[in-house]
Length: 177
Image 1 (cartoon, one colour):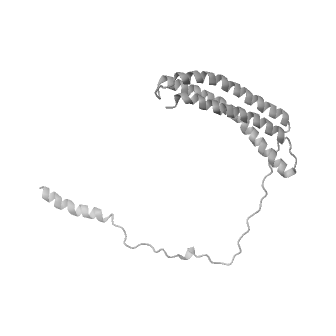
Image 2: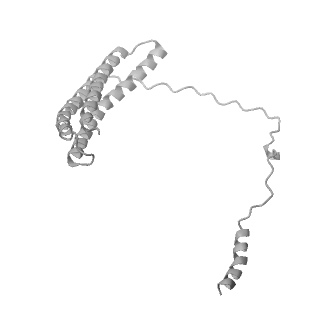
Image 3: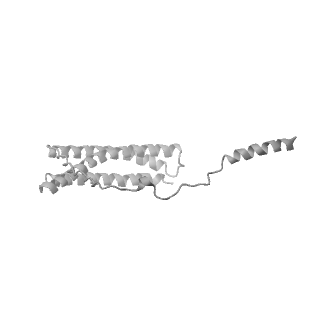
C-alpha cells in the first residue's frame, strides 16, 4: 500500500519540481537600441538662480540678546537645582543593579536635569543662528552689525552649557556599571 502511494506521489512531485526550473535562455547584455543616444539637439543650460539673501538680524538686537541671556541663566539655575536632587539620587544608586528602584530614580532625576539643559541649548542655538547671520551680513556689506555683542553673549551662554555638560558627566559617574 505504501509502495503504491509512493509510485503515485513520484510523478506529482516531479511535475511540481519542473515548475521551479528556470529558462535556460538569458537576456543579452548587449546595448539595446533605446540605450543608444543619438540626435543633434543642443543641451539645455540650467537656469542660474541667485542664492537667497540671509534673513536680517532682529531690529532690537540688544534687547533680544539680553532676553536670550536671561533665558539661558534662568534655565541654568533650574538645571543647578535639579542637579542637586539628581546628585543625591545618583549617589544613592551607586552600585545598584540596572533596573532597580534606586537606579531608576537616579535615571529619572538625571533626565530632568538633561531637560533643563535643553532649555539652555535653545538659547545657544538661537545665538548660533544670529552669529551666522551676522557673519553673512559682514561678508556681504563689510559692516559687523552687532557681531561682537552676539559673540560675547554666545560665549557666555556656551560657558553655561559647558558647565552643564561637565556636571552631567559627574552625575552619571556613580551609576555607570
